[in-house]
Amino acid sequence: MSVTAVSDPTVLVHTAPLVLTRRAALLGAAGLLALPAVGQQPKAKPLPPPPPLWPHALAVPGGVARLSLGPAAKRPTAHVRQGDADVPLLVTGDAIEWTAVVGIPLAAKPGEAHITVLTDGGGTRQVPYAIAPKQYKEQHLKVSPRTVDLSPEDQARYERERDHQAVVMATFTDPTAGHALPSLRMQVPVPGRRSSSFGLRRVFNGQPRNPHSGMDIAAATGTPIVAPLAGRVIDVGDYFFNGGTVWLDHGQGLLSMVCHLSSMDVRVDDVVQAGEAFCKVGATGRVTGPHLHWGVMLNRTMVDPALFL
Image (cartoon, rainbow, N blue to C red; front, side, top):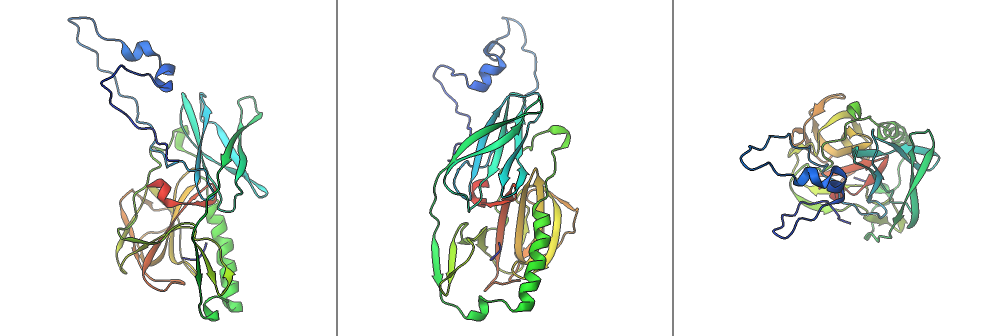
């Protein structure tokens, strides 16, 4: 494929004295610790929904930032400035605390950054965060010039396909009735050795190319590929660089793509469940052998898929 802080909340069981989290304090310590009177049967209460399963937070170019937006009666609206556009962000959580999950472009410069949140009164406020530096690997290759330089016909085809996929990548689906996504964690679409990692920059004959925008997994042609997360099919096509390609929309600007496919067993608007097979590994497009290229996009930004595993 050529296109193109880990701080998860965990539940700890202690035998030591109970320590209340901020969330428990907001809910009310008395309510959490109250015990039934002697001789009375405790009343069954419905369990609260489990918290979202977050992606790993790693605020670097190509990474993901998780930013607290605080409490609010309804899901806040937030966006980030990318170029000349205000791009909507994925916001999940509940009335006690909402969180914006932000994809950071590989081209982002380390330093201070911010997102913008719309307030109840119609104004805005900024939520700052810092982008740390990250050095990705670089690979220098000598290849035939024909594999690097496109003919006029191939260049025209590539530009048409690039424009089409830009529309696909701008997909943003609001969550149903304001509910948060149940999980942001994904499963690996196909078993196999990781043959190329996200962010690798290849230099062909001294000419640097764009960094690798996904994860390559070596697998034999015909190996079934499963959906990493439940989603709706928003694009199926055969492209110059990507070969057979399927895009899935997981909601709120979280998309995933699988490329170089030998078989695509879905159509646009089909809904697939996490773990459901929907296409097969191949060697289509500009590749040297069969493998899966898997990409994850968040707010129109390709991010490291490993952060969602």
